[in-house]
Image (tube, rainbow, N blue to C red; front, side):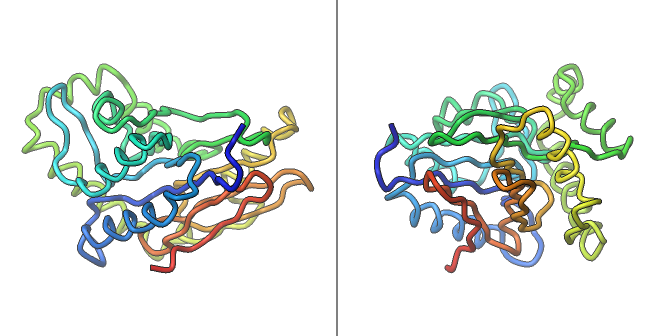
Length: 253
């Protein structure tokens, strides 16, 4: 039984390390201040992918930086507040370091289950209903264990700058494109996918996604909604569930 007054929180797409409009540390510090603000009543925290703009763990080496965020995550788990981190399309390569050092639970794909007596389906959302063949091929390549093993043999001084440059290039390319705003109920891939899934799983009340960097709360049926969490680049938005209602909120720093 969840303690009275506690809430479950959700966030995604912080892209820590992304150097664009502001110093990356500014964004990281803002997110940590938000974590401080929710800690007193947090029952759990779900981070739905792309928390890092690029992350790749070697067997004995992890990316440097992010110490404020990782320290705060460890503070949560040390205090008994579970933290769940989903793979995004920018940080697929989280392996054993974060669970071992920070106490997080890694969710490599989607998750469906009950929270506070309500049925949730959660995923980062990349690949759900997206018809792009190039995206699906790239996603399969990045998740391939053999490719990951081969990539490990390249020195981090080569792979890390390359990964950050690739991520920054993709982010700049998307700025101002039609995909940077809501496409409409009949064109938004995650919404279309959720509608199809709901036909076979009518008990799902909340579909929670990241990835799209838009803030959306869309009813599908009287008892079912699609939530897209926004991001921590421009929206600074998050989800809050108190056991009865789900709210999308903006962090007023």
